[in-house]
Length: 193
Image (cartoon, rainbow, N blue to C red; front, top):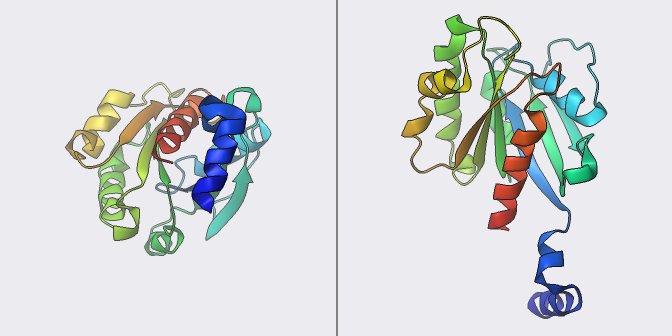
């Protein structure tokens, strides 16, 4: 039955139209505390900077990015707090996740190895074995920020041979790089659907 409906719709609208339809992507956004996760969420959702406090637990948002002109996808996004006592709870938000957004504070050289450990621990979870990984190298506006290539090395991303990943230099407060990262995630998830 489903195949017949799919063939009918494909015949009516053509294959090109079907691939351009809006899809809903399930994703989880994690990273160490103070990396800028919630600032990114509100910049994408509202197009402006919102004063935030540390996320205790998780925020769930249905997100159609503010710049919807070029965005064919909506996102169901769990924005999960990054404090060390909350991190063991991350796994409760992994079910049905298609995309992982891992946010790194590019200016925090002292904790980048901690970020690497948490990322590796998370990627070893069975529920995330097929999820794509988008890394935002956030806070690129700061003068001592590590660039995306340096973050790639420090996180060991080149060693992720069985995982599709992408790193995007970003600045949550200006919005630089945010839409480009989501565009990559959206396009690559749509290829799998």
